[in-house]
Amino acid sequence: MTELKCSATTCSNNCHQLCVLNAIHVDGSTAEKPHETCCGSFTPKVDSVTNSTNRIDVRPETRIKCHARDCVYNKDMMCSADAVQISGHGADRSGDTECSTFKAK
Ligand code: SF4
Image (cartoon, rainbow, N blue to C red; front, top):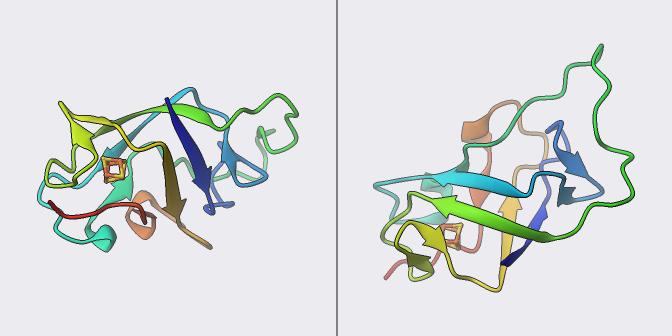
């Protein structure tokens, strides 16, 4: 599995720059550059809802289903990279995030 780090701390699944989900999906079926991808699992924090940001059992290993078929790490729509960085500091929505590890074929 891929070691995932994520700077989208405005996502309810983000815990100290790790993702609490065991699996995410990355969108960007026509992406040729990192900013044309985004994390499709991004869920904005809602103030009134208790979120996961204080969980202590979060592990970086994450399964990543990915639609960015023109990335060198995309193998049958799954990410094969050892480590992935999702960027999205201050993101309000999925489109504000990107897979910074994307590398065009
Ligand atoms: S590195 Fe490539 S295959 Fe892996 S999640 Fe990012 S865009 Fe998808």
